[in-house]
Image: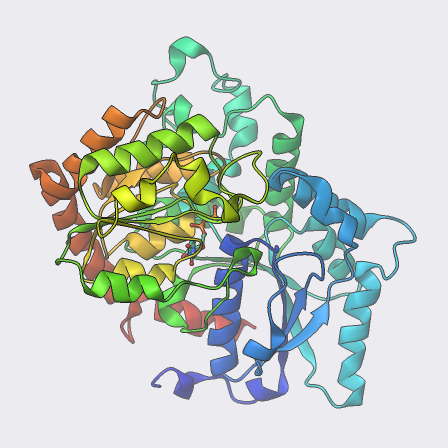
Length: 466
Ligand code: UDP
């Protein structure tokens, strides 16, 4: 409430446009930011895709929604990287109807029919095509980086990493430190000889540098050194300002829906209510990561053997290459898995994750280390990290080596290793020490959210800047 009071006078007569990337981990922080700015007096317009992960406008009556014009064939592009490039290509395609320029123009023109005038457009770092179209219309863009500062600092350093020979990585150098980006080692970098991924990283750097400012979903007390370096680099290289306003889910209570439009299963909260304090391991690999059949079975057996209660999110598309999995969990999970773990284990398709992590019964989180999951877990519970791609590997390094809030489940998945890792996290001394570190992080989160805390101050600055 104190902060609603520092809304900029007249902000109600200004509109901010939001263009998220339509993946859960990108939509949620964008909606949270939109919610905060709306509470500070701005009108909000959100561009959304018809083709997948479309939010339900009726759940956000305070926002205006405008279809982004991206054709449905983009949804069939495949992997995340392919979808990102296909989206941008569709928006840049000559003769696309409507083009992203037309979509933006029609929204800006609404000023003339009594809508508040547009102040700026906030885009995801992956949407260079939108930024170019906005620049052509004289519309300033701010970029929301939905990952952490360490990761962005690393992505902006790829030219240096190639030049200095860290990349492409040599097998014998994987555990060597990247001395320009401590505490990263060569193995923590996004390794790839895949042109597509380099293209994406280069486009992120261009989008960030062409923007009027970068808003990051992290906070000073979590990544002080990384933010300082990033700020120096960005403000010397074009972007006019950089603001760490996270963790955004703590600043806004907007419910951002769920991937694949699955409903969060509230029954699992009732189930958690019956479990002992700190006894349950929550297992979720986010909205995109998937497992091979063999890996999936190791996870299932590892959980069963660990003899710890668990709540496991098994999305319908968690298992690679098996369609219609949602109706066949029991069949695929060897006969009777659910009966055998009855009372001890619960499987859901989608969980109300923040509520789960904050529940007193949950004592640990086995995660793929997507940035949102890490932010949501920091201050709630320690983590077993199982990164798969993109920033997840960097996030894991920070969870383990910098924050001491968890450890990396390195290497091939096997049930023995999983069982040991679960015991280490949930019932051994090392896990208890991680829990203690998480308690300290909780204090840091509380600090940045106070009315004179770093994230509130950054948010005030953002409001004034817009
Ligand atoms: N999430 C959720 N319920 C689930 C699984 C995930 O609400 O059952 C949410 C989670 O809280 C997080 C987001 O989905 O906000 C996943 O984002 P993250 O950055 O962790 O990973 P990504 O899905 O982008 O790989």
